[in-house]
View 1: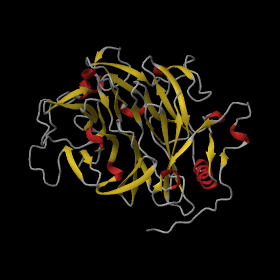
View 2: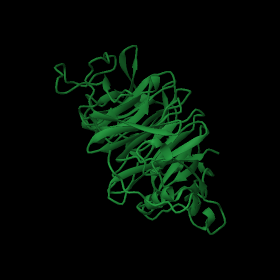
View 3: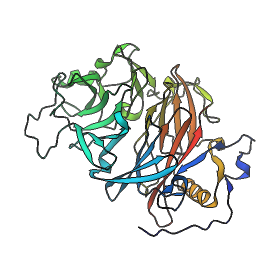
View 4: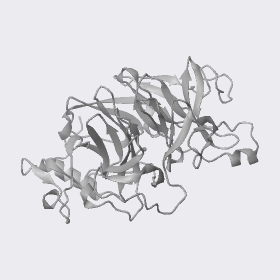
Length: 416
């Protein structure tokens, strides 16, 4: 067991944030509860235990179990918060920096998509063992090295570069696959009756340069466009989420989010990629306040963190009400008001770590929510990953401790 430096506890409890948790205008700061990682204990009660490593992702299962994925010396560790207790398991067979997105699949197991060319969708079992569910092992694969077309059997399909993964409520898997010929683009695909099926993205294979250049954008198309006619460009991570009604959300290029309805048609959800300021979209004033139509808002889908703690993947999740949540970076000098500072009852040890983690941040991040009616709100700030359950929004923040080691802490704030 590693010995860790302790921070002396002077008082039993205290308030996080100055001035009683209010901003100068008298509006209250955002009330949060510590969930995990804000202490120095090795396991046990999650709030007072440490979570070591670079933040990779955070996911919530339908069973109410929260999992935080971190990287320690390139290896993956899955930290589990269940019934307020924190446990962890090492996953030595997966390199954490190859993960593009994590999700929870059927049975409550964690699944990850890998982007590194030895990719695919991997199942992580509770004991840390893994199983390849979609994709190939490039070291042992001896089959056809051409991209697998629609209708190909998923078993043994040549699928290598994956940039997102999600499951629907009925257990169907969706993944974002990168193609590199004739230009880098992506297809969001699923598995139907054991065969591959594209649900979003136009396959550019066989097109001339003039043809694929004319079809390369994933923004600016009319609502109701068949999703398989929308070309999804670039090789960035493309996080996915699926609503209870089967609507698929994808974030190609990180500057916009596209929704694919169960009938196969697509619409733009968020992303003012044309530049300029839309007066219908208000700046965030306080958590959960309506800001106007999401479709015209700017978004930069990304995780963040400190330079030393490393950068996390962007979050994109959908709750049981069909609300979409995502992490977005703001411009360097575009700061959130103090109503988004965190406040709450904490121990002195927890307060010290929370304040340390806030001081290390460079630039602001926000957690955006888009409701099914298209309205936008900023529900929280200063977080690098988000997860949700029916009542709470969970916020993960990366930071480094006094010894320069990367750490993660998690708080939650109640939905409204």
